[in-house]
Image 1 (cartoon, one colour):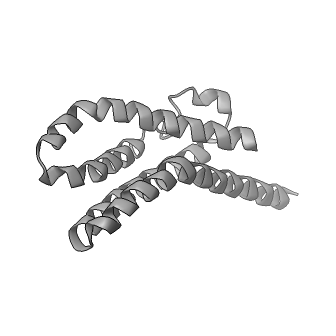
Image 2 (cartoon, rainbow, N blue to C red; image 1 turned 180 degrees about the vertical axis):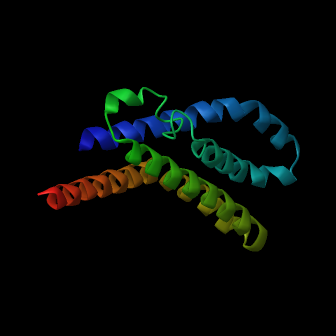
Length: 147
């Protein structure tokens, strides 16, 4: 079970790093304007989520293209994981933007730093556990119905 959770986890981290490197040239133009610096994190998370929601490779998503065949998870797990993570990244990007608009800069900084740590490093493992345990529970129920 831990092999599958870690497999989804490192694929997500690798995906985030690859997309971050692809977004670096655009980050330069965002830093040139002082008003857009608050949008950089929001735009990054919305792009992460939008790319994760793309149904590549028979609906399994871009994470499956990162050597996902070796993980031997069912397609339902890949689809559920990419949808949940994509929506959570988009929601976090929108939340950061709303906090910037309506609350103080201190709260925005704390949310950007500590919220990003949680979303980048802990949330993928939590969602992977949820998706894999939910799939194993439905597999056990379907086995009981066949008996």
